[in-house]
Image (cartoon, rainbow, N blue to C red; front, side, top):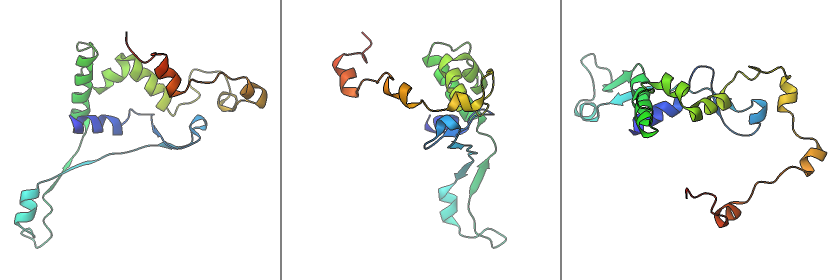
Length: 152
């Protein structure tokens, strides 16, 4: 399951990127990760140092596609959220689950899609007047005291 989860998390849909560091609202810190998977057969690697041609024997196998692992994870999640019939693979998980749709929008590199507003206006910070009157999120202690985190 861990390999399936890591594969799903590391290889995002087309047009999406991981967001790291500061400046996310400006599109800074967008990182595209291209994972690869190599399986090393340890026993074979340490039983023999060189191959028949005299080169180092690595006993390493490259896996061409992470899709089977990602699909396995998507199917697992489909079962867990009660959408087993709808979610058969990674693509259907991204398109059928509302949380994944929201995540896709957040990770998207297509910032101007479905908007008539200019990019600068959409990403600008609050001016000082707005900043002073902004609503403040509660602290974790306040959330715990009010029991808002419980499913009762």
